Length: 79
Ligand code: FES
Image (cartoon, rainbow, N blue to C red; front, top):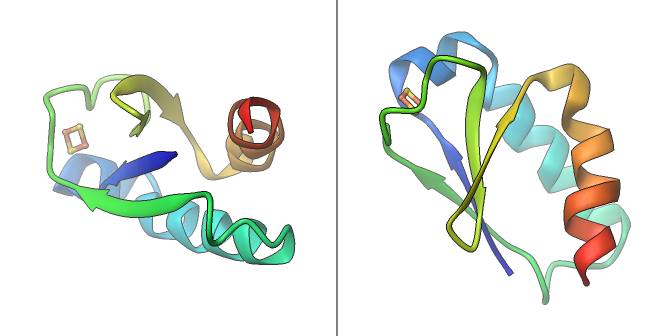
């Protein structure tokens, strides 16, 4: 599973760095480093709602507060 987190300036201001750190530690804590490939991505023009994160091309909008829920539901829930 390929998960890309936007590191463009608008998303950066909304906390993309924090989201990346949270996802990295969640992936590690759940021993999923072999299955989940975390990447940075450039602005895809979806900065309106929140930090733009894609899973295999499917778009989600996150904030640092919703990152854990996203991880449980969309990442762990799909494996
Ligand atoms: S800066 Fe993230 S989608 Fe535009």
